[in-house]
Image 1 (spheres, helix red, strand yellow):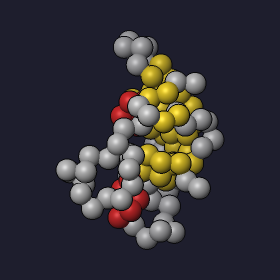
Image 2 (cartoon, one colour; image 1 turned 90 degrees about the vertical axis):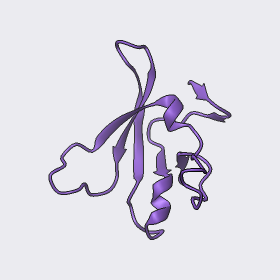
Image 3 (cartoon, helix red, strand yellow; image 1 turned 30 degrees about the vertical axis):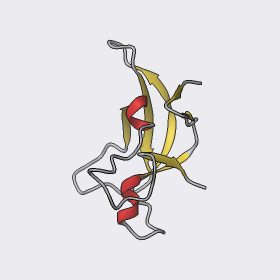
Length: 95
């Protein structure tokens, strides 16, 4: 399994939380996701994380599955842009 930065990659079935979850009550499902797997971009060969939202979408939205480059998915939170966020990484495994 690919590794990025200084920690192991997530695996299919893992439940993760995006750092913006901190802006909601602790028991809210907002910004929580299930990892569906990894994919390779057919043109660039870049590894992508495929993940599914575990919260209700906004009105008019219908797609709950997203893809994001692995390097971005595993990156640290930009503390200059988000100084009040406590979470260290953009996505972290929920315990």
